[in-house]
Length: 125
Image 1 (cartoon, rainbow, N blue to C red):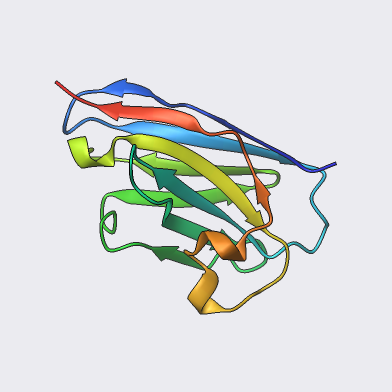
Image 2: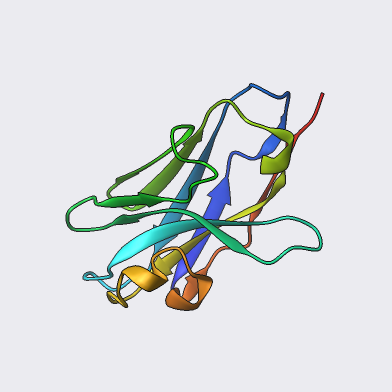
């Protein structure tokens, strides 16, 4: 049974930092990669970043490029978020892509079959 569990969310002031963690278990040994997504109230879920399991290739949305860094280590994935802005406020989810569905889907929720429950990130003064 696949499980993805996020942690590390919280309340932070603008300009601050947070590090999200995603603990993965039960994934197929050859799964393709892990993605981070976020969903703000009233908005669609959007891709933030992803990293491939084998090569560690990363992708970022334009809105977080230069501020967020994704990494992975064995069964863990991380999202280091720096210089946070109020517009980063959302529930953040990690997700697993079982096989390579192609670059179009790397930051598209439809490319991911396994999801965690999410962790709330609030950026506010």
